[in-house]
Image 1: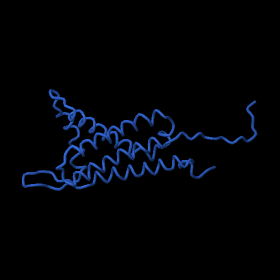
Image 2: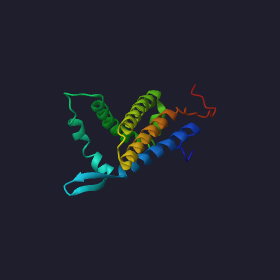
Image 3: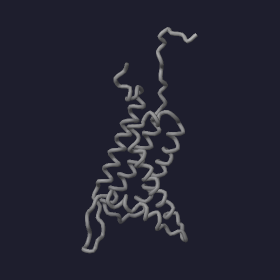
Image 4: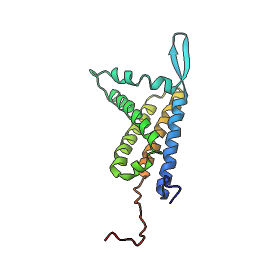
Length: 170
């Protein structure tokens, strides 16, 4: 009986788990980064999580459907992909056996994470007059997308070898 059955046997899956841990740390980090929010008496400093997550539904509702520009569509996709990023970041470590079991389970979310990475980088490079704190948040989110994609792409199916004890069923 093995005592460490939860941990992966292959080096590739171990590296993927480290990337998954890095993805989780980055997710928690960008959610806790401070951001300035305009208020009645000037600006108020809050964490990114207190501003982003409560307003995620409103930001999807307020999309101007009469004028769907590339930026509007990309913003909506980024909002949805950040929600998927949250689910993936929190599930990479505890459900690594699920992620490593099928290539389709890994490739489709990894492609979506790479699309999210590209969208966040697009919005980061779009505005040259962005505050450095906002740029830091966007770069952290982009890195989070990238590490989640790398973790998903690194996972590989580990076949379970059952030792032959010389017992035949016939």
